[in-house]
Figure 1 (cartoon, rainbow, N blue to C red):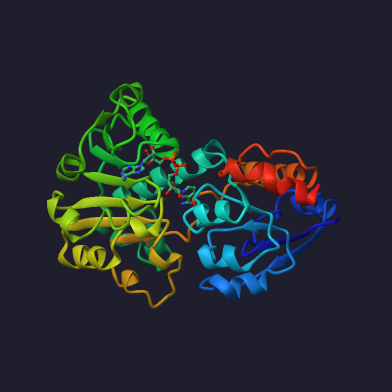
Figure 2 (tube, helix red, strand yellow):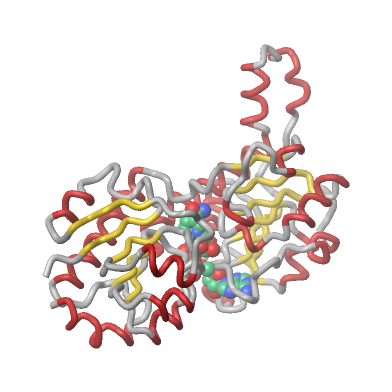
Length: 335
Ligand code: NAD
């Protein structure tokens, strides 16, 4: 049986590698662009008849989707985060979910986090815009701060957070502290990082960089209470997920000057149009969720997704299954 494969809401998957052609050898492949807010039964109907879905960060594959769609066998996430996939519901409904292993995107996201940090410290993009605007002589507006010796607080010292810590300590000689309830003191010490509780991190950091997954515990971890604990004039960097930061609290803190700068690759709703209130502020830099957008990372992502799909189509176990429990049961259906 040649499966039908849907690449949903990803313009980048296969665009820079031979992944699309490799998938076409395995099944009938279609690229679909669906409204990002589509979910549940409606999403299930739009994707009926597809056995394999290459899933981006949107739309949301919720419990109702998995209950209503009886065709999907494999949902291959072309990225790390699984926060738009109800993994429990996928498992209960026998759908295999694969993801890209952390190391594939580690460098790309960690380097962007550091780039955003430096942009906030040195106004790189703002200064460039001024030059384009014929304002070279206004360079006095762009007096910045140095990273060396600053205290950087990392929330989530995992795959990406750990690499950011390495770059900051070894390269920039910054002091790095971290809050991560699941990392041991020994693991942190290996990275030259001091583990703290969240309140201490908020109180001591000059720069706060977010690298935790979006969960019930981390949703709005940066809210007005957290911001009130911070020093004045902190730089906030978010390359993790938009939901970690309460946008209204962020807006207030930029308005009042409590925060010096926000440097964001992700934002609640995962979209910023030209009218977004955050863009009224000068002390903000926003990139459109391009953390993993490097050729090296795309090569790795495409390879992992194709490998997962090839394995499932051949009745074998893919390497990066997020819900191993369902595998045995469902692969037989395609083999
Ligand atoms: P990871 O799982 O390796 O690391 C996450 C760390 O967060 C872990 O060490 C975990 O213990 C910690 N953590 C969990 N709950 C926490 C909590 N309540 N408070 C503090 N720490 C907590 O994941 P990763 O690969 O390092 O990815 C980190 C984040 O980056 C995720 O949110 C992921 O979705 C995001 N990401 C963004 C992009 C992008 O394009 N911007 C690309 C890839 C990943």
